Length: 300
Image (cartoon, rainbow, N blue to C red; front, side, top):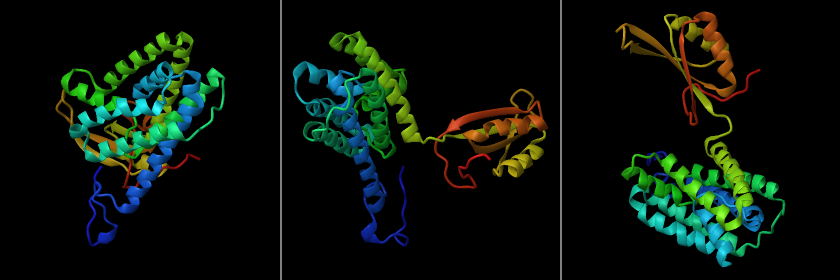
């Protein structure tokens, strides 16, 4: 996301050419990416690699190649990732490519020279905690505009030339990689790898999108004014009235739109049901909310 900054608001010496970010914002972003990369290195060196448990994507391929060749994993992270960054430069943009290349380089150096010790020989503990720490690390990198795995870039390129979505391409690639682990390490290790991958996948979502996902709510009702007032009074949520038209009847429809926290979903349903049992209600997850009257808070 680009941030437009006026000269009158920010001194020239504090401005950055890096996608409209101020120098302070850029430093914070790079710091968080560095922390994410450090978490990834801990996951690899302390849990996954010593226990022959792989992650998805290029990282998983690198773990297998490390065990087959005896060479440090950092070498393969560089070899397998950088071609994707070069090929995907035009599609992903300069900022993303440079940031991701730096993240991969840092990860390669950390895994090769940091000397991070192995924490456990227990395969289940290694899969669970390796997946958690890996997911947090990858999520921090993604949240701050980078990537430490070229698989996503490959998926974007495939998406442009095939009918499959980016998510489907990533899934196909990772199924192949995780299946390969069964032939390289044995099927027990492949199953533990699947556990680690699933946990990491969920932790990436939590870290990159936030623990408390918000909900977007659409309500269609002839009693829209009463429902809107109730949502405002009982939840303290601002509502917006939208004008709509029924495609089948051609009648005018009044649509209520608002954003709530996950904990308020049941209360919204109760409010709507108590006023108009025939109201149309749709609720969906959203992850980024900014501005307006929306503030995250707990329900008492």
